[in-house]
Image 1 (cartoon, rainbow, N blue to C red):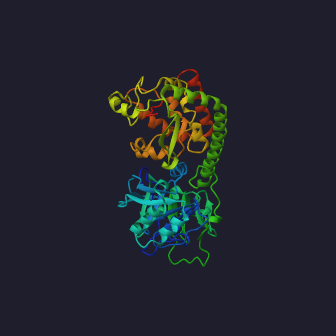
Image 2: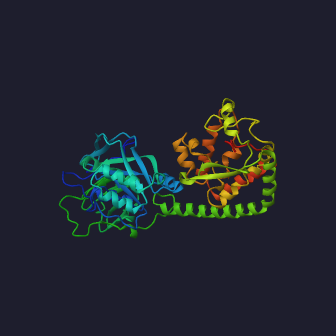
Image 3: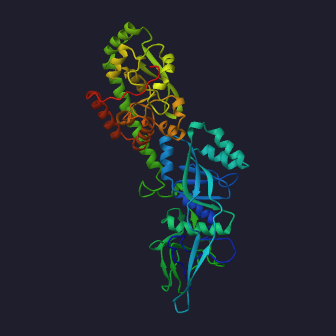
Length: 495
């Protein structure tokens, strides 16, 4: 009689399959169970250079080397891919820190505890690099790649750089060729996957969190506390099992053709809640719905503002020409969603030689990052001071909004040289369209030495909290700040 007890701060024990034959559970190999775990989340595992063809029903494809098995949480990576509009994300899966051991409680003939055996084993595979992608074309190219180098070259060749994201997450890494690693996978799965029957046909929950072949029947003398996975013919006698644990198929016991099978992805029922890892579709629908609503709002507001302010355009244009001549508009190269460059238009508020003067004023810059801002900037014209005071110089940006280069609300539009200061922040802020107003514009303090830090902080906060009602709140705050004269000018270049 064998009991398996949970190690309090280490790895849960497992009463696994004995012997040196191939590991089988419900007639399935460890590799089958790894694939089933991901199928339950709408993800198909694609081995480089071999394996099954890509399934068009899969929502995502996990590209791995043939010897790699990985388990990690999808939610944050999916949200990152969704907001950034990425077709693929390089994922560095880092093995979770844990004390690698399992415990086994040994009972005597009378059913009393005789001793507790503890088995330690290291995990030499601390991290794996894999690819998560929506592209079936990329999945097929990976599957046909003869070697690792070719596979990664295919990823870089088939997708432009702005459609590839990078992420890092904690998880579990297993080496498929090692029997010890196969056992470790089977020790891990019952504790983190509570509904294997959704992806595996031929098993059922015979008692709470205890999964066994569909036709299995207990003789009533066994005590099993889940979560536990019990193989064919694995329970015989007065066994005591305390999960999380597993028992492989008993060697020599045939399934008579009634073994479990992996369900095709198209047959797998979706998760019950959007909070589960398999919620890629729910996240995409939420993202698409928000962007559609946001774009409709942008078109209506920008078209209305441009029509209503057309007479003001004429007056401002005449004032600029009289004060400092032409040009009337200033267009500065900025980056929009995905890093695409566009001309951000404003009424010109600075002298025509503003760039040359800026070099002499550089030491007066009070910003701590790539921006340039000084109080009472001498480059600003008389008409420009009035336009800036009432934010009238930004009216032409509603044209950028109308044509889809900008949004009413979003991060401040910035040029490429500013975005290079912080690559991680750059990728996040370029996952949405820049805005005429935004969270940073209404929250920044202009405190010395803190401006760049606040810029990064509020851009990241906006992208993570982005939603239609949040946008409306920012719009309301912007209007109030203008009316109450609580405006903090954004730094300008030569505009």
